[in-house]
Length: 405
Image (tube, rainbow, N blue to C red; front, side, top):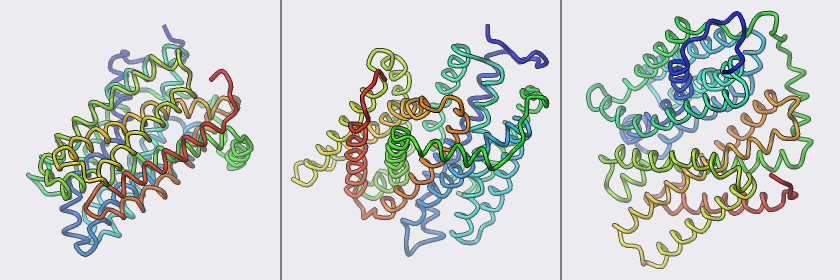
C-alpha cells in the first residue's frame, strides 16, 4: 500500500479516484460542452463572422495554459485545497460573467479567466495525488482516474445538447458553476489538506524564471515541447472545427453529439494502449510511428478529396476516422513527450512540468486559432493544417539524438 502523509485521514481509494477524475474532468467538460452551442452562439453574437464562435474554445485553453504556469507553484506555497478552491471560485465568477455577457468579446474575456481558474483543479489535483501516493500506487490511481475522465468527452456534448434544448446555450455556464460547486464540496468535506504547513515553500518568481531558463537550455526539451505544441495545436484546431464541418459540410449537425461520442470512445483506447506498448517499443518509437501514421492518413484524405474520388458518404466516414486518428495521436504521444521533456530535469520536475505545459498550451492556441478561422465550409483547411503540423513534428522527432527512450 502507498506511503501516506501521517496526519492525513485518507478516504477510500475508489472514492478518492472518483474525486480526482472529477477534478481532471473540469477541463474536458468546459471545452466539450460548448461544442453543440457553437452554431447558436454564432447566430446570436457574431452572425457576420460565424467562425469567430470557435474562439470560445481556444480562449478557454489560452487561460488554462497561462494558469498552468503558476497553479502548481502556488499550491506548493499555500496548500492544495486552498488553491483548488480559489481556482474554482474564479472559474465560477467567470462563468457567471459569460452567462450575462452581451457580446462575444465579453464572453471570450470571461472564458480566458475561466480557463485560468480551471487550471488549478486540473494541475493541483496531480500534486494532491503525489502527496498521498508514490510509485506504482500513484501511477495506478492516476490511470484509473484518467480512464474515468475519458468518458467525459463522450458524454459532455450529449448532455449539453439537452441543456441547450431545454434552457438555451447560456445555461451551459450555469452547469459549469454547478459542476464546480459539487466538486469543491466533495473536496472540502471529504479530503483534508495533504501538504503540511512545515513542508510548504515560499512562492517566489525567481525559481520559475530559473526553471524556464534551464528548460530552454536543453535542446531535447525544447524540441519535445515544440512537438507537443504542434500536436496540441492539431487537437485544438480539430476540436474547434469538428462541429462546423459535420454541420455545414455534411449536414449532420443534429447528430454531432453522437458522432463526437463515438470518436471520443474510440480514441479513448489510445492511452491504455500506450501504457501497454511503451515499455516494449519505447517513447520515441511510439511518437514517431504515430506521427507518421497521422501524416499518411491526412495525405490519403487530401489525395482522395482533391482527386474527386471521395463521395459525400465516403467523405463523412473518412472524416470521422481521421478525427479518431487525431484524438488517438494525442493519447499516444503527449504523455511520452512529457516524460522525454522531464528526463534531463528531474531535480525540478514539478516546476519544469508547469513551464513546459504552459508554453505548449499557449502556443498551441496560437497555431489552432487561425486554422479554425480559415474554415470555408469544408474540412480541407483543417486537414492541411494538421498535415503540416504532423510533418514538422515528425522532422523534429527524427532530429533528436537517439537513446534508449
